[in-house]
Length: 209
Image 1 (cartoon, rainbow, N blue to C red):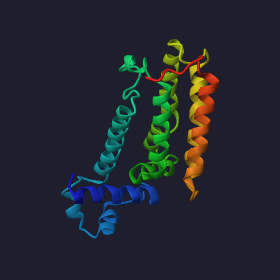
Image 2: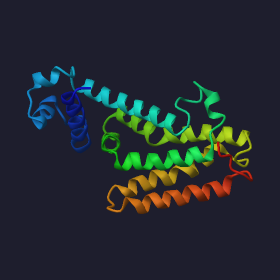
Image 3: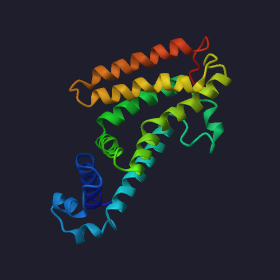
Image 4: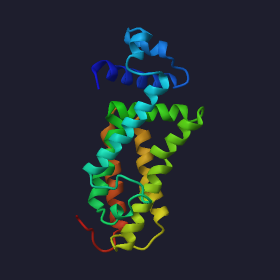
């Protein structure tokens, strides 16, 4: 991606997160960058093309991060076998890295803010918000925990309830960090919460794959 194309994408995302997607025009993006609309159109067909590129990048980053932390990249329905050997260590490391990603990474934090702002005005944004930040992660963890219960890593329990119990503190603490100068305190609370979850629900031992 060229420097100009990257600057357009990030400038647009910052504007979407501040003003809302619907309120931002191509003219506003070009003016913020100090370029003409014609120059912008050399890189993106329209505002929708920029938005689609933002979403595509987020999904690509998500897949890369899943691979890096050895958790499933695809939905359970697509590759159920990838859910069979997830370790608690992988979940802990991935979750902590996700907290840092959503709260400190410039792209991710503005993407989250954009969806949070627009979810009340745009049905597509609302669906993205839930799939990426709210219900999607709960369903994902439910599938992981169901397999862990089958494999004897976790005690018998309702996997959906476990997923809610695990993810709710993450969601809360990410939002708590937004207006806090000391994000570290929320990260340590999350770390402590995950450790308590493990101690409570581990079936006698933790597999460290």
